[in-house]
Length: 125
Image (tube, rainbow, N blue to C red; front, side, top):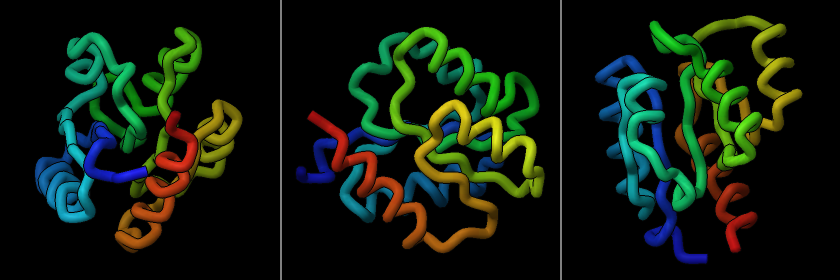
């Protein structure tokens, strides 16, 4: 599938990291939608077109894990890739129980993120 048609949403409260991820995604041919908080993402409404969600764990308000729980509970969770600077086995286990596609610790290699996005793209209709 052509990546240019895939929309990847990023929820990251670090403005520099959010901007860098947006640049990386666009350079790799994805359409990037950037959100500074889980609340901002939820306010957007319809997310059915999102091929993958890149999600930070610690967002200041609603956490990435809480957002994942809400999306999974509502039955409309896209594939999720977590990016975090936290080293917390419990968080990683919780994210994996809920079905995250990948769990990357910052700083991570851009190739690792792009490989996870390729996996998400493979599951698109």
